[in-house]
Amino acid sequence: MSTTQRPSVRREDPRLQGMVDAIERLIPAARPAALSVTIAETESSPDESGGTWGQAWTATPRVLAERLFTALYGRPRTAEPAEPVSPLAEAEDAKRRRDIVGEVGALMAAGKELESAPWYPCRPGDTVHLHYPQAGDFPAFGETYLISDAGDGLMNMKLLAHTCPLTGDETARMVGCFTAQTSDCPLYEMWYEAGPHLLTIIRDGRIIHDGASRTAGQSSAVGMLMTAKDLAAAVREATTYLERDEPELALARLRSHRPLPACGTPGPLPGHADCAWPRGHRGACSPDADYVEPPHECPALPEQLHAVVTVGAEVTDVHIAGLYEDRDAAVDHASGFSPWHAREDLTERFVKPAPGLPGEVVIELPKEKQFAAHGVQLALVVPLQVLPDPFHDQLLSDEMHSLAESNDDYREVDE
Image (cartoon, rainbow, N blue to C red; front, top):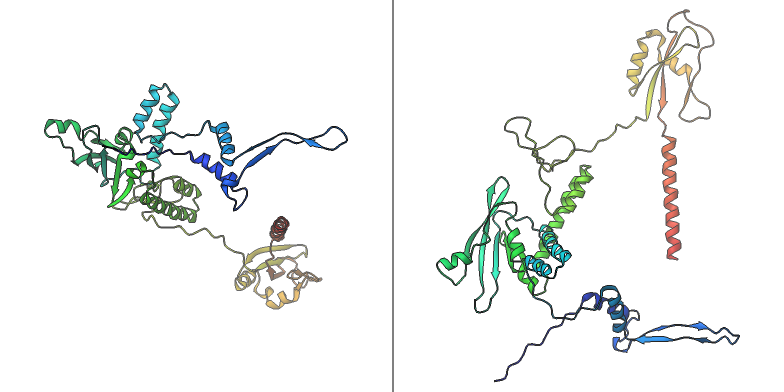
């Protein structure tokens, strides 16, 4: 009876293949089988003949890539791909080899992989399926666990069902060994001892972790979809934090794989909801997580102000009594000094436009003392135009000049 043996599958290191492809693409549209690489040493002749001499090395792109790969990473991996094992088994294997770096690295890598998963941490209601592969004559079977709320922010994991063919006390010894009580994430023990490649996690009726895809060497489309959804949610929340002028919260959300915890500050009065904003926010608390404080706006200066100016008995006694945006208010103030000395015709008589200076005024004081020799002799309302800040214009001009120089630099590079 003849049997057909399954051929050995040899997996090449993707880094080596990347080097080969990069070298073959040096000549676009070339046939890889017809390519060769030549490295030549050229020296000029010391005499006056002007000839050259040297030696050359020629090889295929793959041979050159293998030389480079060996110098950087060691000999390329051509062995059969090993079956996936649990992180604990990988650490124990490194321990037998007395490789302390590999032992610690295997455990740390497994923890990082779990905590960086887009669905981490597990939630109450998640269903976890564990597959036990066939071991010798013992058939494969599976277990199903349920994540439940244990209170105080903790969770537990209980066995729901199994397909172990054993019965009686033997079954009790074989199944349910990963039952967990009151833990932040009950998956830790199962993740390390059984391995993520044997787990299937379902949340809200959807597979969020497919260990079988890891065994087959394929990426999980469901996992990619969950990652895309979580990333979109993170971007939306980070945008909200930026609108609140809280960039530190936006950065923390982008670095986190789950929403930021709530502030939780109790409401000001009994019965009021706790603060729903993320912990560490600025400003006052709010029970509405979507509330956005309006941005601060500085009051703008009016285009024109009105100054109340009084002149005393001496022409050198000039007093600025105040500034008003409203002209009538300024007139009322000026009339308070002396109603008959604050007439509008006096303002028109003594307040003149400054010659050659648009928007500015000058006060022409009376040359003779027309009133009594004591007290306020004249009260005027002087309109003053609010001029733009010259430093602001200069700053804007400098920015436009820098932008123009940058465009010129880019234009020179393109040319």
